Structures are given as C-alpha cells and as structure tokens.
Amino acid sequence: MAEDLGTLPLGHALMLLHCGGIKGGLHSHNAPGSQRCLPVGKPGKFPVGTSGEYYRPYPRSYGLWDLTSGGKAGRDRVITCSTGLMDEVEWMHRHPKAEDLRIGLISWAGTYLTFEAYKNTVTANAKSLGRRQIWDLLVSNEHETQAVVKLKSLKGLYLLCEGDGSVCHGQPRTSHHGCFLLQFHRNGKWTLQCIISGRYLESDGTDVFCNSQVLSAYHMWTPRPALHVHVTLYSPIYRTYARADHTVGRIWVDAAVPCMEECGFLLHFQDGCYHLETSTHHFLSHVNRLVSQLSSQTAFHIQVRPRGLVALCDGEGGTLYPQGSHLLLGLGSRPMKGAEWFILQHFPTWVSLRSKARKFISVLYGAEVCATSACLTPMSLFQFECNSESPTLQLRSTNGCYLAQRPNRAVMADGHAVESDTFFRVHWNCGKIILQSSSGRFLSIAPNGLLIANATIPGPNEELAIRFANRPFLVLRGRYGYVGSTSERDLIQCNMDQPDCIQLLPCHQGIYHFQDQWDTTCQTPNPPGKTAAKNSTRTPRVKIQEKNTLHNFSYPV
Image 1 (spheres, rainbow, N blue to C red):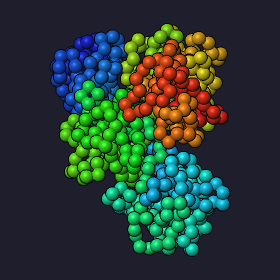
Image 2 (spheres, rainbow, N blue to C red):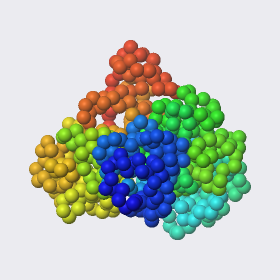
Image 3 (spheres, rainbow, N blue to C red):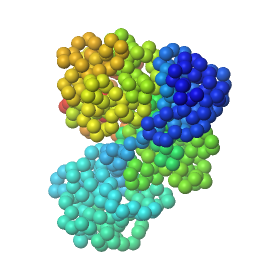
Image 4 (tube, helix red, strand yellow):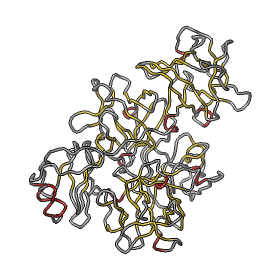
C-alpha cells in the first residue's frame, strides 16, 4: 500500500499518514529506507524530529510542509511532501572554508600578533583584528590537548622562530622550521612552543620573541576566531544546527538545514568575552534564556580548537551544550563526550526566486525544478553560493543538491558541488537576475512550468525576481573591516572591528532600502546593545569609500 501513496489525492495520503496506516514507504536518495510509522500528532499537524513542534501541510497541490509559520525541522531529518512520493532527505554538512578557520592571537597585554609589511617583522602592538592580525592555522598533527602547527599570514609567509630568539615572518628553510607545539589550556588560552628550540612564543605588549623555556603568564595567547561574525553553530555529534525560538526565549540545537534566519547568530567580541546575539537582537544568558540587553550575564568565554571547533563556557565550570530530548542549548557541567563542541561557519545566504508569473521556483518530485508554486515553501529556498573572483554562482536546494543543467536542457536539483554544469553566470538587471548555463543558454520557464536552459537571447521570461529568505539584516565586511558607524560621526566606515546591523527594508522585487541602526529618518528604535549617534537630528549619510565595494563585501546584494 505504501508504494501507491503517490497515486492518492494529497488529502487522503496525509490522512493515512496521520492515522499511522502506512509503514515505510519513505524514499531516500541519500540513505537506505527504514520501516517505521510516522507518529500521530495533533489533528492536521505532524510531529517531526525532537523539537516538540509540528508541521502543518498546505492544502494546495504541490504543497510542502509549512515552515513559514514557525515550524522547524527536528534533528532526525527533513521530511517533504508533494503530490508525488514523499522524500526523506538528509542535509550534508559542508566542511568549513579556509576563511572560516582563521584566527587572531591576543597577548596577555590585549594586543594582537601582527605581521608587519616592512622588513618581515612580527609585533604585538595592534589593538584590533585586521588583515595583518589574521593567521591560517595549519595543523600537521593533533592529539587531545596539543597539536603541531604552523602559522601562515594572509601574505603567504610563515611565523618563524630563529636561533637567537627573534621572531620573523618569511619562508621556512627546513620542514621543522616554523613548527610550534600548540597546547590547549583549561582556561581557553594557548601556548606556542618552538619545536626546534623548545622556547615559548611570548610578547612584552609590543615586541614578540622566543627566549624562555619556562612557562609563564607572558606566554599565554587568547585565540579569537577571525571568521565573519554572522555565524551558524553546527553540532557534529547531533548533526544539527542551533536555532533561536523567540516564542519561548530559548535556543534549540535541532535544525537539520540552516535555511532559516533563526539559525543565524552574531558572535560579538567585547572585553575578552563573547555574546551570542540572535536574529531579533536578543542575547543568550547564563540562565539559558534569551534577554534583550547585553550584560555580564550574557558573556561567555570561548575555547577554540583547530578545524573550526569552539566551546562556550561561563568561566565558572559551566559549558553550553544540547540537553534533554529536545536538545535545549544550556549551561551544564556534564556534557556527553564531545557534545560541547560546535563548528563555527559563516551563515549561508538563502534566497527565493520568482518567475514573471510570480510563481516560486521550487524543487518537486525529488529533483525536478518548476515554477508552479504560489506559496513559499522550504523547497523554494536555495543557498546562494558565489565569490568575488567570478561572475558565476551555484544554487543549492534544501535537498542538499545543486541545480544543474542536464543534457535534455532541463534543470534538475541533483548536481554536486564539483560539477561544471552547476555553475551559472549571473546577469543583474534592476533587482532581477538572469541565469546563463555553461552551454551558453539562458534559464527560462517552459509552458508547463519546468525550468529549462533553452533561450539564446534573454527576455522577460528569463528574468527571475530574487529575495533574501533568511536575512532581515546585513552584516557587511570589506577588505579593511566591517561596515559600521560611531557615535561621534555620522559617516559609515569600512574599517570597524565591530559591525552595524543594516536592516533590510524591501521596496519591490529585489530592491531594498538599507537602514542603519541609528537611522532617524524612518523613526525606528536602535537594536538592543547599540548606541545612537549623538547628533540624532541630522539625516544620516552613507559614504563608502572603497574600490569595487560590491564585490569586496561578504554578501551578494
């Protein structure tokens, strides 16, 4: 009977599922099928995962589970439903990018390890984290509390300890030259011991050297993740993402796909501690609840390990980790082995695309891509992957696969990241985009709603309206720092250590107004934890003085 589910009317099929009358029948492209019953929930709702929440199906044809009203995927897997067979899809977590693994090192004096552009010297006199304070941590061997590493700057040169105790910046002469024994301490500090001489890397607050073999407080360095502050927290133990639930003021670690704005967090660094801010500008506190104001009760210490692993602690023996059957993120002292570690990654951009007929581009029947849905569903969301070096992009569906042009010109959601057919050249046109496949043809909507690569000359039928799906605001970072403002000036600067949240006010298809936190023109309050400009009667001006500004920012806008 399960095999005939796709031939039943949607309402009848859902009724059978709700009554527990169908076992198995869940088709998966990524994992072997399993015989199980869907649990019975409230009338018209279906429980999925461990979050304790329910999905409500749309009554329309091609209706998928409604995530727009607050329902979220549990940790089990994402379950979708259409008029065809049901698909069980497991989102595959991607390894962090190189830029997500970079760090800054803070000395006991609060200054950063810095490579200087002249004479290849190394100092520790910078007060903020910039390009010259960012290092790639290259790990050759790791075991529990220590690892053998090299530190490589963005200039491509290495941190080197010489025989006379001096520290410079250059190319290693031997395989062991530039190698340090990195030791992780319980207080979150790091020490770096030269493999060749056995001396520790230290600083006097200005200069950096390797002279002493006796460990002291002057040898302690505090690691600071140098990735973009808008992040996701992924649990490798549970294979789920943290998400904020503002209806109850909690954070759960149960999201299977990080496509919702609730999965994005701002990791603020202030006075040596970190504050975890949600998309609605609330902060996680030590009592495991979201509060509106930043304070000492929202401050956490961070422990950093290579490969992007972090743990957040309160400094008094408590550590944040998922707890209970619903995976509540809270402080505790007895985490399951490894449960306290999260992988930090830059929060991915998700967008929705609409055709000229105002239908959403959606993935149906597992891999077909159509423009037939009038409602925004999870299968209408695509991860927008691009870089400033190329005019091409990739679109990743919530089924874990990429849109790709196939030999019959149809566009299917069954591609892999390394396939050339998954790259599309993007042409921007007044808030809309036109996508050109690797064959040179432009994507258009066929009369039956299918997305195909057929047009040789683009026109209105090839234009797609694009909207952010998981970003109520932008956090922009350029070459020299974040885009932000100060209370003393009414100019927005591009070299800030801490960013401003630029609110997105939709105007019309693909066009947004950018509103800064202290914009008095629109008469909106400042987000919690921010300070308005002193001269609030002046109309804010935006002056961004940076070459090739659009491509230097981290978000496609």
